[in-house]
Amino acid sequence: TDGISTTEEIDGFNLVVNALQLNDIKEIYGVVGIPITDLARLAQEKGIRFFGFRHETPAGQAAAISGFLNQWPGVCLTVSAPGFLNGMVALANATTNGFPMILISGSSDRAIVDLQKGDYEELDQMQAAKPFAKAAYRIERVEDIGIGIARAIRAAMSGRPGGVYLDLPAAVLPATMPADAGAASLIKVIDAAPALIPSPIAIQRALDVLAAAKRPLVILGKGGAYARIEDDIRAFLEETNIPFLPMSMAKGLVPDDHPLAASSARSLVLAQADVVMLVGARLNWLLGHGKPPQWAADSKLIQLDVDPVEFDSNRRVDAPVAGDLASSVAALRAGLATTPVTAPADWLGSIEAHKAKNTEKMAARLAANPSPMSFYSSIGAVSEVLAEHPDVILVSEGANTLDTGRNLISQSLPRHRVDSGTWGVMGIGMGFSIAAAATQNKPVVALEGDSAFGFSGMEIETICRYQLPVAVVVLNNGGIYRGDDVNRSGGTDPGPTLLSSSARYDKMIEAFGGKGYYVETPEEMRSALREAIASGKPALINAVIDAHVGTESGHIQKLNPTAAKK
Ligand code: ADP
Ligand code: MG
Image 1 (cartoon, helix red, strand yellow):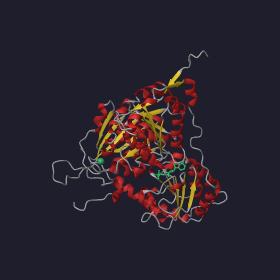
Image 2: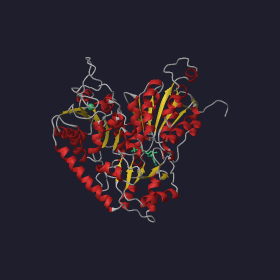
Image 3: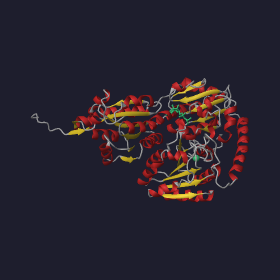
Image 4: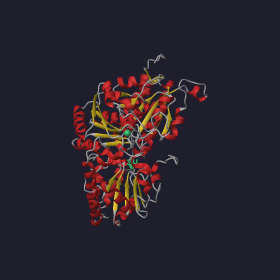
């Protein structure tokens, strides 16, 4: 050429959006502000759906659960320092649960931040993110945007999935480079979660342990739901007749009403199994660390996991199988041809008998119709309506609400229940609901304790603004745990566990244009929930339940230390 540049330029804003779109990112959840407002605008203009939230934590939770539901990273976008830190709660939760997620936050001027000269929202975000993220990266040059996004996707997706932090200093966004070089710098990630084939020796060892079992049990975890192993694991169970227990987010991987489901004999099977095979489930607090009194001390363990570091984390694992679950379960199934496995009939018989007894007890409990409603009668009504709508995605959090709902509500489809997860965290409700509604094209029901709802309740405005098909059910007993505590110190303030039981959460949603329901009986609950689901529109059912029902800390009272002096 004649030396006069005629090359078109492209800036960082456009490159970030192009890189995300090249990698099939279709939604962004976030809250705008300096320096990422125009990034969100541009993303929306180019066809990415931007969900603008009221707070970054629920936006991040939406991205996290989108990662779980879609097997592809969910993206959250925040401003610097405080916005970033709010998003970190969700990023840490994603990492803990093994959900692929990318938190992208704008950040302040590096030269000012690094010498702590005091910038607007100054924080060394990448360093702050590291202990809570699977990986943390910073893009410092416009020509590195493609690499930065590709590395974030790979880190989020490969091996055990997790949360990745991507730092975007403000200066990178308006920086420019030649458009053709910019386009060439972008990377479409190929095979983001490469198959990890288990070793044939490990598979044979696992089959040998299973074949010798007298009382085998399979525990299905949310790793299996994430890995989408529903067809093969169901076939494997049916071919071997091994009973199974699903962890809460693995419910529906094999239907809860399957004859081999042992949920209603949970204590019995955990205590009596002589071989337990963990399939994408960890031996953490949710499983009593695999130890007595819940478990038999001498049971043998088989564990299928993508992360070999997980083995022996709480107990010896006799047959570890490292590999991606789809490959591992397929290999186990194939191995049955030469190493047949059949669960003994007497084991299944004793489980059957126990299930029948417990089902009878539960039926009696559900037959009671107290006024005001209890957790059982209110959630029983919810479960009846949900049985009519197996395609509903159920979101749940709370203490007693979560625990009772997990027992009472059956799932027949995989990835149709998402909840407080590994941390037992509160505050996931509205964010999870928004992402489920946004990406699954199905009705969503959020079953919430009144306390749990409060952590993300303002997002019902977001639900109404986007007209999402979410029905929120708030079980209102006016308290964290129970609504009948007293102020034990004698002052005039309410006790620290008390909330307002007269709170009209149903009127909140009406203020934003949604439909509110106030219900006091199971009949009213059923009819309100039926109508709400059928409407496909935002709704909130404020269900008044007895302030005296529920137990402190729900089903995990043993984890709650209490003061010596009452
Ligand atoms: P739950 O709470 O349902 O028991 P956890 O989150 O404790 O489930 O455990 C899930 C396990 O699944 C984790 O250890 C994780 O490494 C594993 N996992 C996740 N995805 C895969 C996959 N694609 N293949 C194999 N293992 C996986
Ligand atoms: Mg409550």
